[in-house]
Image 1 (cartoon, rainbow over the protein chains, first blue to last red):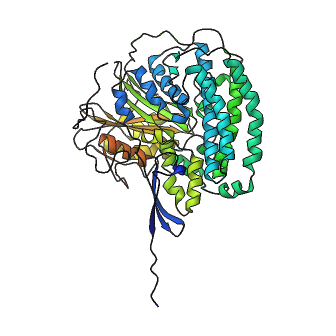
Image 2: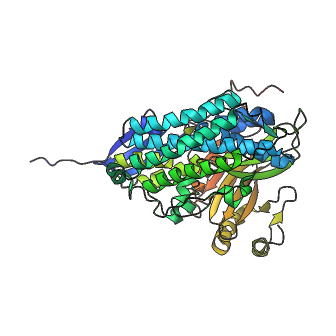
Image 3: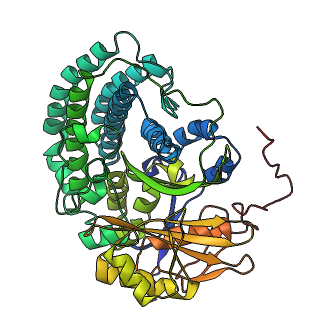
Length: 368
Length: 149
């Protein structure tokens, strides 16, 4: 009888695959259905953001930051503007600070809604949860649209403040949203959180230990799901965050379910922040009076903020001219994705989809 | 910054460490960096590599390491100056797994060789690409620098 020859089989997962959330290519060597080796190939969206920045003025760069993490574009604007303002020494009007934080937190909710919706969709809950999440996200996008005119790439934050004052009816609309969204969040918990199939697909899958998370410089909800209570809004507070009350949700086992639940609880906390800030928006200017041509004093700075995906850092070197000499962007998804080859080892293909969904990556900022 | 415990200890152990005035970076010679980073991680809990950036200063290159200590809640900014021709430096992937992709990026876009890196390939650009676009003098057929604004 001839002997059966068994060999490893290599499969390309992506770059065109709905579960990769963009154009990510994972090359997987399989033994049956189990992954022996997983090599990520990135760079399909590369446009050398950092080189572009060296040739643009500080204000012209803002639209490019939108396109890094396009799901949380407001937070990217925020991080970039804060970095430049820090080196500039600009004083931001109180009103602008409040508007910025409210918008950033609404954007965080929109981003987490998309993360949770697509994550559950990838696991086979076809349609319903995703469409629920999109329905709620739509309301936030409507608020953004009436504020700045755009629905995805906002460029709403400017050096020194925001591009336009909040429109009439903004406060009421945000309050309506808060009142509407709280019960919906409870609905999600009933629908997803303790769903038997969801639990089987996510509990004890893709466990990321504390040590590994630190070693790989994981940040954001994925870090907090591994038992490290670290949120830059608390640890290195910027803007008006020190004045606002909120908790930092933490979980300890670091599996896919924990990463999911941390995001769910963060939405609740973001609602709390918006709720506190919305009543206190002071009167005044929405943008500081800065010169038309902005020259940033020579210096170097690494500044980081908490974006929905984690630590968004900008390393800025200025030579005193109107353009940055060097601007390096530390994208949270870039570091968070690097761990995939480690987590994917020895699991089945279906679980890689769960792991990838729970890490919540955006290829726009990975490829830059 | 100069009077912090870990800065003094670092200066003591690696006598060639110089503090760069405008940036607050600690500049180390290339051959010390691996041991210095290891020392900071082991003794002072700098267990988080926030960022690794390569910089082109036209006459020289530099690699900047931004470390964070959860224990001390402090940041360490280390810098190494490298020559423009054949820049090479010891990889710190053994200390931080996060350095793997960051160093590949610096290799890809700035052309810095990290010796001892387990898998030093291009990461963002195609494997058969030539040149390093983040160098200030980068040029290529069809590459047009931005007009002055």
